[in-house]
Amino acid sequence: MSELAVPAPAASAEAFPGAPAPPPRPQPLPIRFTGSGGEYFRIWIVNLLLVLLTLGIWSAWAKVRKTRYFWSNTQLAGAAFQYHGSPGAILRGRLLAGAFFVAYSVAGRISVTAGLVAGAVLMLLAPWFFYKSMRFKLANTSWRGLRFGFDSTVGQAYAVLAPAVVLGVLFLGSLATMQRIAPGEKPNFVPVLLAELALFTLWPWLHARVKAYQHGRARYGNLAFELEPSTGAFYGVYGKTFLFALPLFVLFGIAIAGVFAATGRVEDPGAVKRALVPIVVVTYAMLLVAYAFAGAFFTARLQRLVWTRTHGGPLRFSTSVTARGFMRVWLVNGVLTLLTVGMYWPWAAVAIARYRLECMTVEASAPVEAIAAGSLPAEGSATGEGAVDLFGWDLGL
View (cartoon, rainbow, N blue to C red):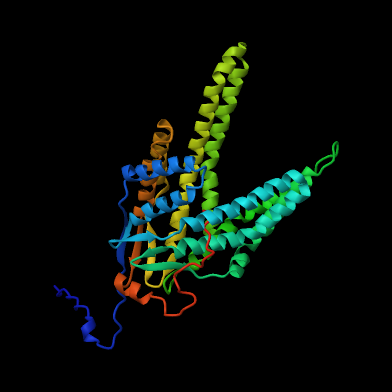
């Protein structure tokens, strides 16, 4: 009988001093959310009352209080995020946006041409609004005393969003053409259908461009983030969401058609009127459920797509969010919110935030302290100053 060969022990790294050291194994840093529905309810109810008493003016302060609460209860590696936004800046931004929308509404009442021009102007300003909003949000968010930033220019924002602006203007133009049809003239639906088809076909591509711009221009001090190109994956998310939602809305349509067919056979007009309110309530409830399931499916898929493709230096991101888990959270909290006529909303908001955040994990291939220290902006750096200018507006986009 031949002897069994004993495998030789693997050579250790010490045996080859000149060999490169293996890369460090990424350290998982889970995100924790420590907020509670009871705490947020007190903030929410005070904000609601003050918004009503001030005819909406307090909404800017309400947003700051809400954002600060959620950020201060979001912890990464034991350190909480902080929000430094100014209510005055937010109020100025909302007043500015409101003025533009009022001008658009008034112009539309004057004439179709005036409404088209005002809508086109609003579309042309949208990239600027978006750029200012991103700068404000990131520059007023910090972790471990170091602020985030958005390293972009207005020109880059217009370059990214130009296709969306062009499609929006063309769509408005096609609608305006339909409204200018003379009485008795046969309408031509081709321009509207072509504009809608172009918008529908290109929307996932536009969404991918915006997300790549958002994540690719984000900074933590001098640490730059990047979103790997994923246009095809965005089309996949939209396509799967459509296939998932289609049976829901088909069943919804069949149920509504059956209800109306049944009421059409009722000969008592009084009975039909009495049944009208319950029918409307049930219809809207079914529609909300369908939208909730489709929205949860889309949101979960999008979160997985975006964050698993985002990285910055030694940091990568992973998420365990699932469409089924997110739908369960949405359904339970949505039903409780409806049953309590909205009073359960603070608990629902906390539950949704906790699920989405605690599904996230940051994978660091270097110590967090070293990452933070290496990300400090150079003194006098124009791109890493970590503060927004005096005219930074947050439009809540």
